[in-house]
Length: 200
Image (cartoon, rainbow, N blue to C red):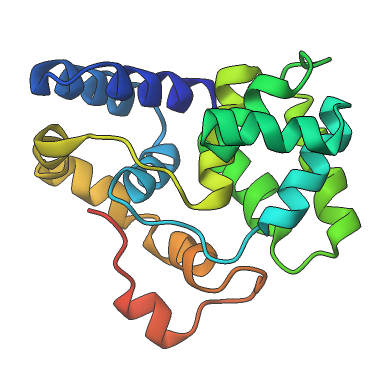
């Protein structure tokens, strides 16, 4: 998650296409194909469906941050972004988790779909306790489906490379399963596995 978080921050910090292209090139040259596929999925505007409800996210954040409900909502109103509010209010993590983007998506985010509220909130608190502030912010964006960062023409340049496209196609079936059928752990249906718009 650390590498993907650094990529997000680099893309968000610059308006120059050359800087964005350099950040993308550095990231995709240094991560496994599985991470590259998920990164492309999110950077092209796709998102996981129906993973966590806002009510569970807020309830878990209030308990983890140990602030009153009114203070949390006042902070949210001032900040204007739920993922950023959560990241700012949570205490420092007690441990570090160096797993990759793919591992976080498939082991921590996608399995939340279909769980009861107490289970979702417990897993969110456990996840936050292993992420730093910037990682929590990006994690929150992925959870809520509000992940938007301006890759622009730089992203198009990266996706146009045939070798990179082939790396992403390799993981099409697995990404389709999580993106279109969260909570179902069998094989994706023929409709989803053959027609999914996996980024490439």
